[in-house]
Amino acid sequence: MKVLSLFSGVGGFDMGLENAGMETVFQCEWDKHCRTILDRHWPTVPKWDDVSTLTGEHILAHAPVIDVVAWGSPCQDLSVAGKRAGLEGGRSGLFYEGMRIITELRKASNGKYPRISIWENVYGALNSNKGEDFEAILKKMVEAGSLLCEWRVLDAQYFGVPQRRRRVFVVAVFDSATAARCPDPLLPVSEGLRWNPTTSATAREEPTDTLRASIGSGSTGGNNTPMLMFDTQFGSNANVFENQSPTLKASQTSPSVAYGITGNAIGRQDHNGPNGPSHTEEGGPMFTLTSTDIHAVATTMVVRRLTPLECERLMGWPDDHTRYKADGTEQADTHRYKQCGNGVASPVAEWIGEQLMNLEEQQ
Image 1 (spheres, rainbow, N blue to C red):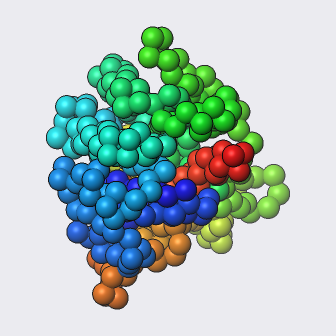
Image 2: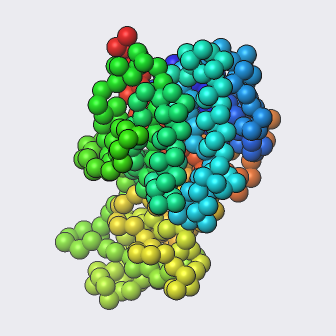
Image 3: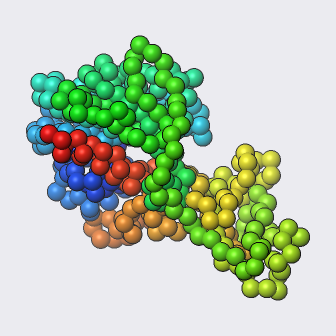
């Protein structure tokens, strides 16, 4: 299956779908730092920088077959961490540019391409503007010719990477033969459902038995498991309250335990801290990576920032995927952190790709 990648970032979506057996044939990404990473790893794939000036005819002239459009329009206006401007916001409003391109592709190919659209965004897209934005997204898919539209909330921690990263994925199928082969559900995991534009969507929770990874675990032996208790003002050290665990003494060897620390707690005063615990459970997955927070882990009695390599691994990307630019020089860590925070966890994309590739085998 041939993939058009819009808002490509550094290719997290692309890598996952390619691992499932697909092929990336066109990419569009406006950020120059991301583009140089794409140029390094996909040097022969045609690219475009500005989605607002990209046309369906141009894409088909360079990539005559487009089976799948994989895209995640900017999320800033839909995220609960943003100002919640919704689809009318300057960044998230680029969703309509993506839909324009899908419509142009269908017109230029007489309805043949694309056969499938996979749209990814933050969990906050579900309740942005009291749910009206998400309803508008589903309706636009139907207006563009979708015969089947299914959404799911997928968390990366259940797909082999130790990070809590809940994202909404909407799969829209435009091809009638493909839609006829789709099982119900197409994506049989987590919460979500197929959507009928004449009814309202309600979520349902389904169990999953896929792999859950962890940052690490450990104990000092015996029946006591060590626990580090943090305040919300983090510097280079973690404050440990010894009276919480009689086995934890300053004179003893520190236990080998790792805890993830939420980025919005680092360096902030108590009243500015996060809602709820600012650290994970022992051995639990890392908090969601973002493009702005300072993500950290506490191992024994030291708090340190995650390295770019660790962030890549939390996304399921190859080591040093974002390290080198197309010319071989190294990229600044600030760009690498941002790219990881904005990216798509590849193992999740790979799982979705596998479900779609199964449909191809049924032809």
